[in-house]
Length: 592
Ligand code: F6R
Figure 1 (spheres, rainbow, N blue to C red):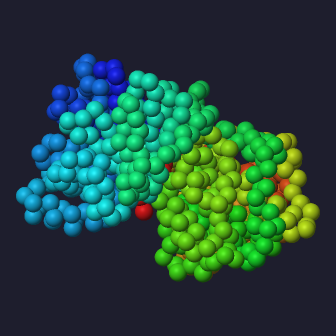
Figure 2 (cartoon, rainbow, N blue to C red):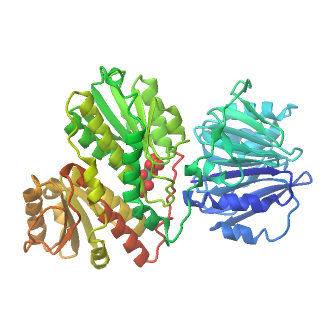
């Protein structure tokens, strides 16, 4: 989603630095970009729609500026257009702003500005911010920023320049913003992955705080303008790890990293006692567990709930974060809420965490990005150790989530006095990509059929959901994921000769039931691909048998999803689409 860069340097030519760093935010998704440089008390503005290189083309000159701000926009208020692209200036051209988030009361504030003779030129909620700054005539700019942020409702990370100063003003609420400084420059960014080359450490601006950043100082204030001290965070390997290497796409690279990631998690959790705080005392009185997330992370929640109920026999339910918040949840001190998020910034998940904490629940966050807001706010953090994930389609992070959830469910079991009953060492012998060459043929089958279905029971149903989400999001092919047992309660009426149905079967106790669902489909003319690791004899109802590697039953959900991740990737490339940047989607969804 939207990205922010602000840069102040002792050296002129700052636009190159800014564009270089703005490109590091491309992976988050955007549809237009813009830059504002301060040149002798005048703002110099360039914007473009589409790729950042279009913006770069417009900057083919040596600028002598030392200060600028820039933005990648993912449209929310107002269509994709130059007019709506950030940065935005105040009508009197004294302030420039870039903004991530949504100002919910912008219509109200727009009327207020109009009553003061100010006409906005874009359809965005952002343009009100520099104009509000310009309407205050207090002497101190940080005081103005405080007054303006008090008027804003919603979420924001904002970065402002004033025409008369070599300084960057920033503020945030529910949207991340980071600051870094060295001897010759300082930089503001919405994502610390941008800092790796030039800085050794950075500061995370706390929620509801403001700051003035210049070459001498980083002055941070709380919402009452009390000065506060914040501690720097070291830049670690995570922030530096986003090289594409020999791969064509990040999606391809990240799927191929799954075995390494699983191994890394097992090693890391063996070496560091991440479960130390999840002890008998912590779990005392816990009556139920809620697992909360969005999209792929929600699917991991569904799987985790199944693991926990089965392994530890504690009541566990998965919740979609955007629904959880409006479901009048029945949670209290006897509830443990586990939040799953790759980015650790998903707005609905973050706001659900805040709600759960306010209601007294205990909280655990399972996140990949170590410095993220969700990681900072939960009682306990379990790291995913997956390294940076760039492709919008979450693949290695999903497998990492399942691995950590399986370790956690085993830990709960052990706390309850029962011996652990999963042998993770079996994963060492597994070929995660066995039979993967067949996926090309299966992808051709997908392209020949008009209707695609994914069915399964229990854990395999969750895999069916995730398989469907992967296919939809990067190939734009419409498909249906449904529990096998629900087929004949409605969806079977869709099945005909134009249908291709993936039947996922990894549970020996349920395989007969899955095969009878396959027969129901066959009888209606549908084609069947059976995806299994069991020793199923191919029968006449199965058109295509895909066998992935066998492992312990308890670990098979870690492997069963991989053929579908590869299927979506291959089909997407065949169709000529970008697997890394699907249309309309963003990697980090920082607005509700
Ligand atoms: C799908 C996908 C999304 C994310 C969802 C939550 O491939 O990536 O569905 O899973 O937006 O994101 P995180 O995990 O960052 O909270």
